Image 1 (cartoon, protein in one colour):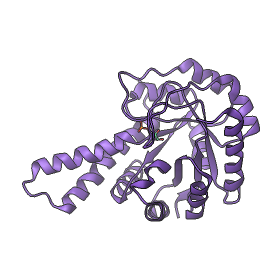
Image 2 (image 1 turned 135 degrees about the vertical axis):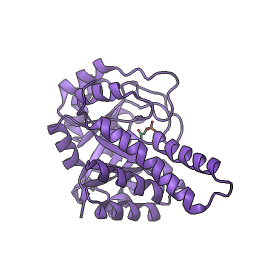
Image 3 (image 1 turned 90 degrees about the vertical axis):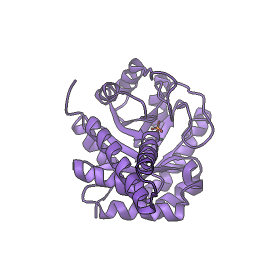
Length: 280
Ligand code: 13P
């Protein structure tokens, strides 16, 4: 039984100045590839899916698969709902056995974000599950509409967390979901200011396209969970495309293996950086 609590993984990451990789998955091949990479690296990970992606991956199918894969893994794996938008889906995730949920109240006024985060905390508490909240707005799109970025205001972090004590806080510091237009410009001064105000584990969304050096700087500034989605979807697609180019008559199980392998390599690469062992 390796189903882990996100809160335990983040605490361990804090002790060792690392970040836990949180990898978005959409199907069985991605789950298999991600867990295989975590086992190879002997490093815990978080498997997650965003609420907006449930149109492709019906929750009643993908959720039991994620939880079951985590239970069977040889290393601790937490299972997390990414960008939860509604309390009914959050409740379903908890019922399926997810060990943490994100409530994305980032587009709401502060008071409403605090209120919905507290409702999520109350629901999660009954299951011993963790809660990630978001303050400021991360730009780009995680399967839904494009959002306009609003940098997290350090002034409100303390108030937010004192009134809605989430287990992890997603920050907006120039990071964005999807492919960046140009080189990402992360605001490390804002990150450091937030870090000085709270010991809460901080979460970096929009991991695709961020350099290894910037990942390490983020970890050194208190980022403890890093989300990777687009890079994994791209890795699976690229690997399938390469397999098909090499075979005149591609077969389904060849495509399956290519997808698993693409995800495996991508997750393994990110875990090596997030373990923050080699200083450049
Ligand atoms: P990317 O798609 O940019 O990797 O972002 C992932 C993410 O933050 C999921 O919430």
